[in-house]
Length: 431
Ligand code: ATP
Ligand code: MG
Image (cartoon, rainbow, N blue to C red; front, side, top):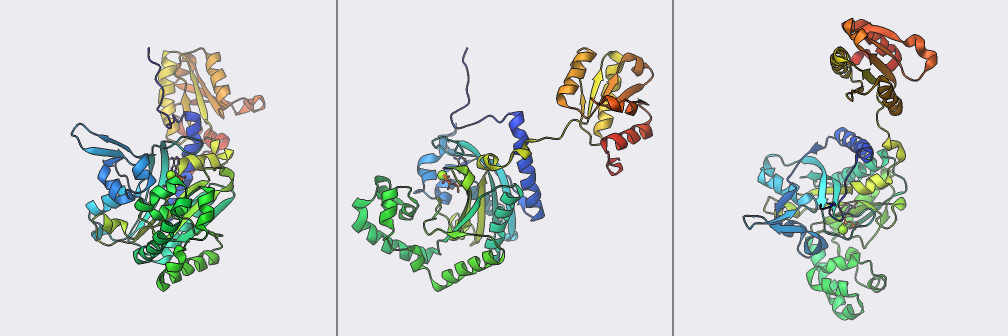
């Protein structure tokens, strides 16, 4: 027999781990809802061309990390490495001009062929938010505060916001000319990876992790010095507003981000508690992407948060799930039928009612209820079932024996009274 294993860089998420994931997702979704951001779902698989055009062929993601294959019709397909290009495609395809302003979010798996390590996988998950059609500095601020507030709501500590501006196309090409001249002179002092980038994507050299190259780059021309007056003003305005909102930030002139489509503000949020894979959120403005992909000129800004890193960062309190309210111990033909009816009734009260369907002995069923730490317990044997009754009591609390009550299945009032008194059932949840 073959012992199958999951592919390297992918992970099974098991029920106990998923409690935390679900709690994290719930907090995120609530905050998105409060900020009036709406969900969009696009396919996980797209035409390869979409990412080549959207993300840029010189980027690491496109040149080294994509899961690309030919389907049976010989079409080149790619598992999405990120969500922004797909969202832009979906909006163009569905008539962006009829709805020029949209605040959207998506959440789901992304695929990149990278070296797996803590916080870095080949199949990982992102929450992405895109404000499409928004041009103002206020939208820049709104998106940064949204990312910041989500991370704060999750109780994540040691957050740092780093910002930079990449200017517009003209600023960038002016800088690139000067930078290329400098690179020509200094080429041989750079690391090999950076040398290779000179022809393909020189801006990315600024993002190098190579210590020696970093040092040499200190003398290179700076993008900031090539920004137009308007671009500079825009950036200063953003910094001013962040100060007003008391969101602390650091400026990082080397923050250029991995994807080609960014313009003006680029930002990352890191956490000191993450170690080497410190970036939990990356985002920025991408005013050219939609038009570059064939749509009308549409400014936009967005961010993506890596959920695996978020899970590593968020606290243990999020590992707790709702406790079982009632465990239904039952044995015997009649008892089983009554138990089934009762469990459905209880769930209509929004209670967690676990029906034991094991058919095991009463004592084994009680042991299970004990292990689960169920708040209360119902016991039904055929004797009770014959009278259409059941016994309910708080579990594991001998002193509260007096709370034990025999109730008839049809006596809704008595049942509700008991639940209200002992399980704090709110009358408002009754339908
Ligand atoms: P990094 O520098 O860590 O490779 P990136 O710049 O490639 O990040 P983005 O494309 O900006 O990442 O994606 C946004 C976020 O998605 C990252 O900040 C990170 O939290 C998460 N992320 C990216 N790649 C991975 C991965 N392979 N595994 C887990 N999370 C990832
Ligand atoms: Mg990366």
